Image (cartoon, rainbow, N blue to C red):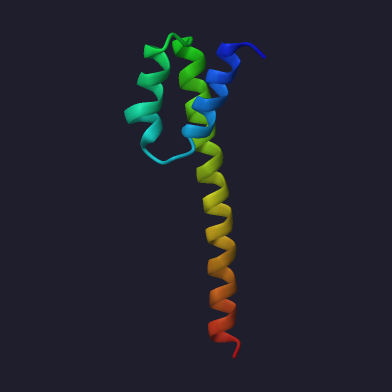
Length: 72
């Protein structure tokens, strides 16, 4: 892996933090010289994965709480 791949991996991971990809991660990635399109895609994908996981687990937890509350 070259240095740009490591940078995009960092953008992907940091993009998982809500609102950070738009405020700090994408501008920082572009300022250090990463490809702007690849930086944006990596940040959006990192954030999207976080949102999907949160929605899935929140839904599962909600269903369990409703079942626990009304089935006792």
